[in-house]
Image (cartoon, rainbow over all chains, first blue to last red):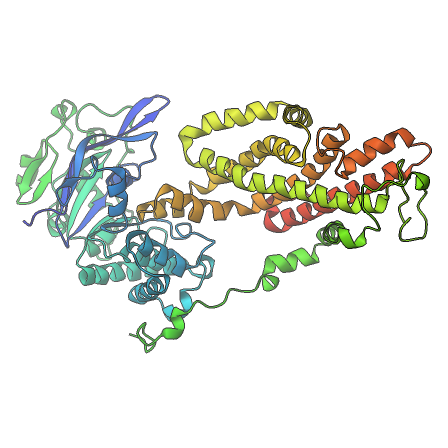
Length: 327
Length: 302
């Protein structure tokens, strides 16, 4: 395995609230090697987005705060980096795209201005040259007649087009890592597929690593190389996509996969996982999935299950792992 | 790749010219807005008086002619608005007074546009500074506006600058409030976070992403502030705290004419009317701007 580009070690992110501090991300660790696509999947509120915001240093502070761990990007800890340097990394070495393309662009400037602006924050480059680069980027993200579109305002574009512009903006300085926080959730299914194809092509072209956050297992299957499944602020299982889909080890992953519709089997009603995500105020003391788990035993409720290897580069946090693999 | 790539697309590298302002939809809506146009006509009238004062005025506004005192308005250019108790030409004094009023009003607007925006943006954007700055604004706003202005003007001594400073201290907190309110909304929008994710610094985010999206309420507010400033300047001058008596201020004219209000009404009525015209014009324009730029604030017409 190559040296990781991004290495998140024991990240803990907390939010101060009226009822005390809650831990939204608890002891999360993962690596991303250059050129790889890591998918982070989980239900709403499982800590996916907070993880991404922690990496970018964009947590709303207060109430949010990284309480522990380290985030190494090319060996340097982003959490200890001076703010100024972190700002120079953002947009240049690490790009980010957001869920809501309709509001992620500034309504009062043309899209060309906004892309040029991003370039000019990081590079000493003239207005004309930046404009040229903006047109080039728009062409790369598949916007037709970019030399005319560059002077359009965001309201003149559709949601899919705006997401393309967001991607153009995020990639305008050729980042090594792209964080995509639910990049397709707000789009139509057909547009979703187009955007994923586009990201896939651009990922090859720029040879960048992508961390894609989604709650859609289909997106993961189509797009990611490796996947981390998050539950209630912790990683339940992580490993290569094929392994996770073919031989999921954690009961939560198994549940997630069996509640995903497919086109082959005819089930009258989609299977679901009973119960809901526990409140962060009253987390179960042992395994956080235990109250909803069909395979729960008493031992599940005492002590946090450790991450254990299932196969090479595939770990899960479940104490009944051995039985399951055998079963 | 399309045929028009960047390399041969010199045309594309030129920015197209912006839509001229008289073809934008906002401008079209404004010129169709009746009360805005009435306000514009009234205000333009006062502006023309102010700009062409040296040519309109039949004489020096301070030249006295005791033998010609208390001449009633007449159908004659020189005596169109009559003379006052010292025989000074009221037409001259009114047009030079327009100059003074508008200059002070404009000064207050500029001070508000600079300091109100700065304080409002800082308070709204940097949450830690919000509390202290807004409590300071609360403290200033706790005083009745005119009382505070009188206090400051009295402390500084009468001059045109005094009026500008005193009125700015009164109105800047109000402008800052309004700017802060819009900044609080805009700063939470996703494009601000996107800009932060793209590595933009705080000041760049404020100036390029937040403030341009807060302009509508600010422009409306400034047009009303202009009106208040003209009115308050007249009040300060009336009380002898604004412009010094050597300047032909509308407030001073009313004060001086007050003694003769029974015998020579025109001494007070004429400057009173010009104040009313200016303030009415500015308020109508402000209403129009609000309807066009910030339709959410529109009051239902019943």
